[in-house]
Length: 627
Image (cartoon, helix red, strand yellow):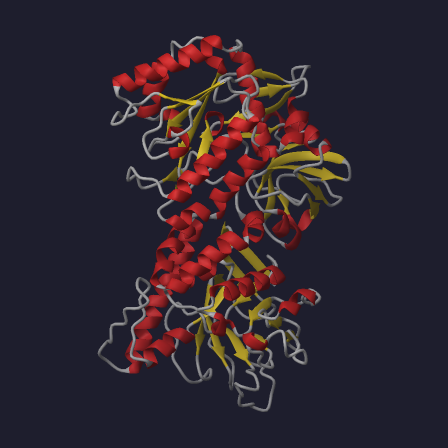
């Protein structure tokens, strides 16, 4: 089997798959259902057939999948097992209704085909969790009774996520009889690789034309059932092509939030996966991406990139140690905020503030809640965009309140000054917070800016003096805690000195060797070998390679283990035994590194004993190499 991943977007992926026999097919894969190989016509671009009978080989260049049915779906036997004309065979299974999944113990929750290539899983049965992993030969995992769970969002999501986890990154997941142009984006977001056109035929039989926009509007079309099937299939193919495109542009979530509004159960399903299955999404969620993040709906508040930001702030973030004046500022459309007209005007107003290094600026915004100034270049703070209406939803206000409370609690502030507009009662009703804007004043009104400068100047003058260079070191330490956690940040900063100018600060050791630098385009620390040694010694971000000479990037086939918290985009320290062999950027999260046999696991920046060690002052993405 060859599974070649071209692009990833959390659990969704595009690429190609080729089994032991049959042609290479693209992902996501659409199966055309035909009564037999000899009946029904394929259209240009069709790559796979799902059928029950032969006879004879399928068309050249088309994958043939045979479904052996079940006791409720009897299949006409042609005297053989189908191996002579089918590339994959879905084994016959005993039906297990989801409502009785945990009661009928006599029915096995999993069934494997005779050739060991396909496993059928009754994911609605909780005892699936007690089953041993699929045999190593299994290439496809099929979720049985998937269609019967549609419309029951929590159970559907639990079953799909349980099956996706069972399949692992190295196998394809197929949901029979579920996909439509309306829900394909959601299915792909859940990690479904293979779908079929069953619903296209069923809707055509009802006289309905499927459209992706609205599930409750079914426009009867003139024409025969065959015409409707053709139109529904055409729409399905267009949606498959669109899903592939948006995954490759890292924009699937935006499409999902549009498409789920076609059916209420999809909205509930998306909310369920966001709130109940974060731990399953997080290992596949990149810590950085170049694509924008459009937060256009209430569901955007719960998407994994946003909740990961909030949880990391709550778990790891501590404000710069010597700051004594907290200033709360509004966000801006342009990112990073410091490049916007609004924040340049605010910076000009505060330019004459004495003891400026003691002032800590935090931007309040949705959906992220709060963005400390020293993290404004970090994803997704520098990449999101939102519709601005002037009003806040209660859950947006609550997120801001929670994060401001955390920042105030972990900081050592003597004064808190708000330059925010109306609508944030937790600030307006707090007597310890000074406000620089009166009712009706804008953030850039002269009176508001003058009042802000006056309040900040008075508070900073009364605070303990902090040097500019010491503040830079504290900002870098704050970023290191956010990126790596407290233990690693402490190890990196111990005895370290800061050089350079923001935003490209560099961290050096006592002997002058560079440990890390801030890459402005990513807003994250990029490690040298010296820094990698410290991170590995702290027990984090390690990827163990097999016993070979590493030249170029580290491929997944050469990975034997990895720390559990490595995510795509993370700094990854490559070790062999206890020896650090290099450092680079993870292209996969830990689960995929350990399961994949192809693809780049770590794009190397530096290698021990040569390689790119001299390139420590830029973000090396790594080139092709051998492993």
